[in-house]
Image (cartoon, rainbow, N blue to C red; front, side, top):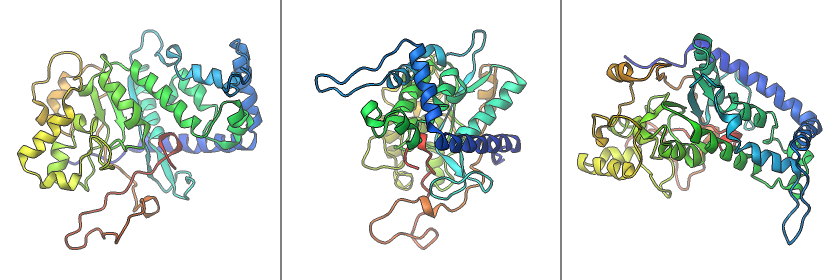
Length: 361
């Protein structure tokens, strides 16, 4: 039985959140000074003061100091007493005709809003059982600063006040790393793979793998592996365990698996590749898994694993719904571009649609 598309209730909730966020962002762009004043007021209340430039070091505003501290404030990322929610993580997004358009004119639904809508459903049925970074106190506060918007950065003083280019992503990377370090037990990843440009790949998965309260075997991807991959790649390299460590988009960076080339290898070479990727990566805490590494958890959630899993939401397994051909987001290629479906040409997997928090838009 094939996994379902994204459930209707989650879709509707995600669209509501996406459109509300779009309206809030437009408001922040129209009146960035109000955002800047709010951040500066919070910094003043925290007893911070602007640090003047000295000894060749640039000036660092109290607003910058406050935001830097917020990104590492564990208290604001820790669940309320008496709750132990499953932490959800997300990366990129999908095309959806009813979603707001991104800066490339593509109607784009971020996985952020899908993960939040899923968490809403879980918490409605069982309060305190699911969360995302943006639903924590610290995540909400940082999100409401709209640091991805150039107008807000300028209102805060720009580079002269300690806000250089790339500050927003660096700050979200830091708070994401802090959030991952506080996770416990199973975690869910809303995405198919971790693109090397993403915060998920660069910070979160590594932190989750070494987190003694999570470990590699507790990382679950919400979506099955891409159907454009050969079946042997989906079966052996599309497991939760391998996708939490490997990357599939940049042959020049470590931990790369070529989905087509992997399928062409011998079984022995494929096993050696996976073993080398998983070597030294900490497993989940608790009893050892009965299966060897090379036969790690399959993409589908097995009934036996569901029965043995801790109480709480079961890992959903969805297909990537609503996706349309993404020609506007493909990277430029050198030489002739192969045509999917032509003789001898493998199918072309689309690059994931990016959002500001996860890399270039």
